[in-house]
Length: 495
Image 1 (tube, helix red, strand yellow):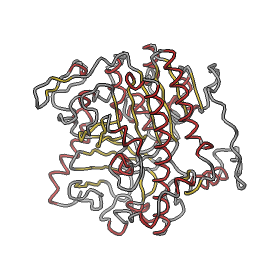
Image 2: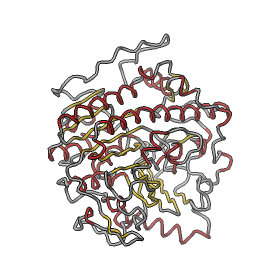
Image 3: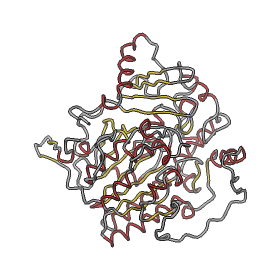
Image 4: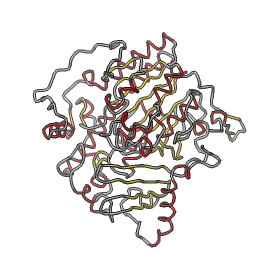
């Protein structure tokens, strides 16, 4: 981009000129969690779910309230935000598509850009969807912990050796053939559960990933080398299980019923799923009211468990003094339905799936401690870090740096976000502004949907055929077809 965003200035009410500090020599800590419904988090205002560590972190960072992923499941979403390219360009639109085989020739990912800059790279747990989808990209890492390394990788062994976890009495090994009916049924049963995991906190993989991160941060404090550390948390992805002490924190009787019940929906574009089974959980049929409340309570418990683990990481960052020189990014790879519309899990272009948490702390940023209500997209992550760290990035990226919002989170920004859905049988695209969400489907019972988000925030009434919205439909359809460049902030141009 022609404008050096890092030098953009904002003026306070007092007249004081503010700017970002020099961030080019800072480290990066990326904490990514799976399947996170942003409004479920206490740090996003949920009055029931307890996330004290993220609450504390948010007070020192910028919380983005309108952050949207570009795809509605893990693989295409991660491929997009780790390349800075949109799913139609990466050609990764579904979970089962191997990233390496689909990316256009020459496309690099964030770790590769950072490696070229001289960063020490460490990853703990999942970053890309699967190792065999990203062998080339993972091979640049100096340390790989709790994540299968690619063939030929020769790095150090685990920094912590944990004792083995005893297997439960009903444990069954997975069938070897991942394409078999037996394997699919085994996987369904593993996923379609909620409640007590039967493990202590210290036996859980997510705890061990956090403990490993804390140990590595202490090593980085000694080495003084500029680092990128990606730390995963597998929860709140299904199964919605965690140690009993977290489950006991939430009373299902105090959980409100899910909003937007199926019987309230008008001209709904996903009619079959609203009344039938779901991916990952409640796969065979819809839950009873009691089961729904229990599952939501378990989801909150998983978030509190994850919050405890994140607290351990952030404490280590502060104890070592690295918090003063480390950019911290907390995000979820996409959202999650919690019974709204009769939906559970992901795979829709509704708000619950395409909105995800994004909290960013750049030491010394003027906007730290504030919230941002402007639209940002996860495809903007690589351009933003590229500007902050002075990375050598190509000109064809399809996001823009949101670094100016780290100075002034109220400045006018993007007009819209763009989302793709591909379930193999059907394909859809969505554009959403602050006021409207518009979807088009290649197949299905309904070819298009339009929601007035100000009047109908839970997307219950599709007004695409309402004569009163005829002009709005045309404008939103034109915006969708014009694409992301038509929604750029005022004064921003890209090649």
